[in-house]
Each structure stands twice: as C-alpha cells, then as structure tokens.
Amino acid sequence: MGKKSRVKTQKSGTTAAVSPKEMMNLISELLQKCSSTAPSSGKEWEEYIQIRALVEKIRKKQKGISVVFEGSREDYFSELMGWAAECGASCEGFEISSFADEGYGLKATRDIKAEELFLWIPRKMLMTVESAKNSVLGPLYSQDRILQAMGNVTLALHLLCERANPSSSWLPYIKTLPADYDTPLYFEEEEVRHLLATQAIQDVLSQYKNTARQYAYFYKVIHTHPNASKLPLKDAFSFDDYRWAVASVMTRQNQIPTADGSRVTLALIPLWDMCNHTNGLITTGYNLEDDRCECVALKDYKEAEQIYIFYGTRSNAEFVIHNGFFFDDNAHDRVKIKLGVSKSERLYAMKAEVLARAGIPASSIFALHCSEPPISAQLLAFLRVFCMTEEELRDYLVGDHAINKIFTLGNAEFPVSWENEIKLWTFLETRATLLLKTYKTTSEEDRSMLEKPDLSLHSRIAIKLRLAEKEILERAVSSGRTKRLHFQKQLDEGAPLPLYEESDIALLENADAKLPIILRKLEEEDERLEEEMNLVEMKPDEASLAAYRKTVLNGGSKDVNGTQEDPPGSDAVPEGKTGDGVEKIPESQDEPSTKRTEDEAKEGSE
Image (cartoon, rainbow, N blue to C red; front, side, top):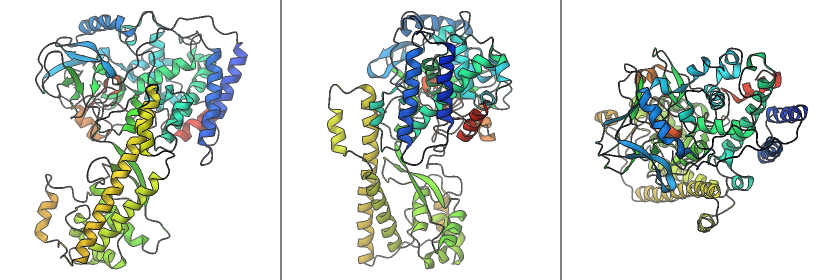
C-alpha cells in the first residue's frame, strides 16, 4: 500500500495506574465533547485541540494494554503466502517486496502480460461485514444500530476481535498489516497545522472527531452492554487500538457483492491490498461464478518490476485523508469550488430553469482540475448560464431550437456570446484569485519549506497537498486570464460567433467528441464530496450490482482504489486501494449521517 508505515514493535508494558471509574469518566467526557453541537464557523480548530487534549490524556493512561505481535510485518509475509495458497488464492508470478518510498508492494517474479489474470482471492479469505455477523461480534451487531448502519465500523471492530483471538483464521493476514499509518489520524498537532486554510482541513478535523466519538461510544458499549460480554476487547480496547483498526479499514475497505449477488458488502481483501497505486484503469473485479476477487495486469510487467493497480480518480486530498500518501503524478488532482445562483437574484428563476433542463443544480460543488482546461463541461455550462443576460436566458428557454441548444452549453465550440465568455472567464479568474488569498503561505514559501531535510514525513505530505491546491488555483487564474483576453480579442475584432446548426447534434451526441452538456448527474464534480469523510456503508444500486456480476471486474487499488470518480462499486482495493467491482471506499469516521451518530451518542445508544 502506497506510503505504508513500517511496523513499530511495541512492547506491552505495565498498565498505567488508573481506576476503571476514572477511565470511564474520561471516556464519558470525551463522548460528550464529541457529541455536542457543532462549533460555530471558525471555532473548529479550537474544538479539535480540546478533543485532542482529552484523547492524549486517555492514551497516556492506556499505555501498554494493546495486543501486539513480536517482530515486524515482513516476518509474517511467508505465513501470509502459505495461508493464501491453502485457501486457493493465486500465489505464483509475484512476491511481496519492499520498494523504497512506496513501502511494501507486489513484485513480479516472471513476465506478466497486460490484462493477464495473475491474482485471485477467494471469499473465504476476505474479512467482510457478513463474516463479522457470524463471529463473536454477531450478538452485539444484532442489537447495535451503529454497527448495523456502518459497515466500516463493523469491520474495524471485527478486525480488533480477530486480532485478539489467538485461533483466528485471519491472523496470517492481520499480522502483516502495518502497526501504524500516515493518515491525518496519526499526525501530530503541529503537522495538522500545515493543513489549516486548505480544503482538506475540515475533513481532517471531522475525521478525528468522529473517530474519537466512535471510540468513546464503543468503549462504553464494550464495558456495559450484555451482548458485548464475550468480546475479547474488555481488557484491551485502547484509543490506539481503535485508531489502528479504523485506519486499516479506511485504507483497505472495498465493496464486493454478497454471495448471492443481491447486494454489496464491505470487505478487506488480503494479499491483493499489498498492491500500490499508479495512473491507469481499474483492473480488479469480483467473479461471482467462482466467488473470488480477481485482478488482471494493468500493463506488461517484466520480471522484478513492481505490479501496480489503479485506485481510481481520487484527488490528492482524498489520498492524504484516506490513504496517508501524496501522489506526485496525480493526473486527476483537483480542488473543490462551491458555486450557486443566488435566490435573491432577479434572474434566478430563469437561470435555475435553464440549468435544470441541462441536468445541473442551481447550487453545487464543482471542481477545478490540474489539467487543461481546468473546468469540466458541467462547470463550463454552469458558468455560462450563471453569466447569461435576460435576453440570452430567454433565447435558451423559448428561442429557436431552444431544446437542442441546451446541449451546447457544455461544449467549448459553441459560446453563448463573446460577452458571455468574457464574463465567465473573468469570474473564474477572480474567484480563483480570491481563494488563493485565503492561504497563509505562498507557493514559493511552501517550496522552500519542502527543501528542509529535517521536515517530518507527515509535514511533508501536508505541505505538498497545500502547495498542490495552490498550483491548481494558479493554473485556473492563468487559464481564466488567457481565455478572457482571447475572447476579448474576438469581440474587438468582430469575429463571427460560431452558430449552432441542427446537424451539429450528431457531434454533440458523439461519445468520442468533446463532452457537451450532460443531462445527467454531475460526474466530474466529485460525486463523493459530501460523503468522502464519512465512514459510511455504501448502498448498492443496480448499476453497481450489474458491474459486480461481470466475470472480471475492472481494477483494484490498494490504498485508494476506485473508479473514474470513485463511485461505489469501483475496484477492489488492497491496502487502502479500490478497484472496480470491489471498490475501496474512503473511510472517514462518520455515520450514515453525522447527526444520527451524534444523536444516538446523546441517547447512549450510538
């Protein structure tokens, strides 16, 4: 898994002198703090510091109570491979090896051809929500609404229970998991400070708060609920334990179909999750007929080369938050930009109607991309409508060929007018410039900081992410200026406006042509933005199930696997990756809805 931490061998020491009552009081205080009303704008950092102080106090008193394994993870790789072979997994053609900055991964031991099926993992090896229901966790699962609603939380506790069970069949896998991770859950306070003013900070703070709330809630459940009496966690359930389990699931969870193919469930996929990420296509899927996860080669691999998979089109913010690494060559990096037509605007109704006919909300979260052009067809269409005059709006509503002209809104070849293009690119240039001013450091200062040899890994990841956001915004400013000047020249020179002709509809509907306006849900504007920080169980849909029924699913990604936009049902994801058919879902620590968890926490039934 990309950027995986090496195992730190912990020696279990003597538990700090702390009475059960004292610990329970601290846990109650933490739960109350994490379940209170959300802080007012600008107070999130202050709340984070308070929660962190409580957590650190608890961690100090819990030192030495965690279950640990002797040695390091590499000591158990041979045991993992042996267990995989016994279970019927493919173990030929590759081996686990260390790769400099990328940590452990799979290395080809022979030449492997592109699209060759080289890896398959049978269901019996997978840790899933279904296997959790049939384990010692089952009785509690049947009674606890949080576990029933949140598959990722169920997997985290399932992982902890199996780790504490000396006879668990999954121990060969669990022993090879990292002892810690590089996600923001493991950042020191000063390292998190580097993310202040970035678009990632709110998700990072929410992730920490939700993890702390869940830990406090389940600590109380484990020590008081009758159905939790047989769990092997009562004497060893520290915050560090839960953080580790959450990070393990967050960086590795994937969606696979249930045995009958009727719905999807979350799973951890041993061995496959050792693959690291690179740009490409999803190459992992689930074969229901043979009941196994399958992965084909992304490209030709020569003997001794590292075998990669594609985690999906994730931004670097998603990689950092959910997988703990920054991918330098990320062709899909982007920053979020929230735009909307003001309801108080005189032309709101007309603009909202044109947007509705184009399948675009009047208010939404879009994205500025690292590539050129920096905006998608959807965002171009939105900005054109956003900047339309009343006359232009009327033309697109009731003018000649109004219905067909809607299809041109997202096509760069058919401007609404030169004035409209000038206005939209001026708006984009101005908006990106204002966003850049919210950062406390300049790009030059960030680059200088990255040259410091004593910079910690986590600080380096945070500063790289901060710089990447700025570079995307800077390119948007430059692109906006260039476009604005170009269209101003067109206007000044009286250049004829390209006119839409009826015959052009063929171009617009051509899948190979530049994407025109899309009469469907926004796809490039981060469909998952609202859920990316939520440790939620994704709900299956017919499209996902159809994809799962394919013999070979598209791709798999370990720390961050997914599909084009990482929708549910992407690729299976090893070590935090996501492939198609078995998508690795970004895991944050939220419930199906944060409010629900907070409410249930207050009720003592979270």
